[in-house]
Image (tube, rainbow, N blue to C red; front, top):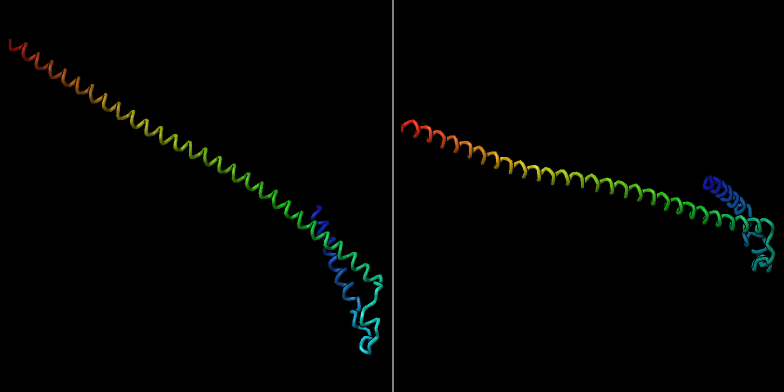
Length: 146
């Protein structure tokens, strides 16, 4: 709202300044300056009303220019902070995701190790059962031969 108002005032001041500057006569525009009129050659000490209005509008124009720049810088900082907050939040979320993926990988590695240990245990038990069965068969065969 404030920026819109400042832009409108700034543009109106710009147009008024253009109009007033074009309306004024130059210092050497008098016909007397060609023939050596001392007042025209060295300029006059008094500034007419149009010159005073032009000076006032020029000062106001500079003030609105400074205000617009400061307002845009303030908005840019706000949007930059908002963007940084968004990027930080996204980075934190990414870190959380990466952490969870790494945890899953570590868990998968642990599960794989546990499965390997279980496989060894099962194989050992299977070997024990097979050895016992073999021993039982041998013992039964010995018992029958006696």
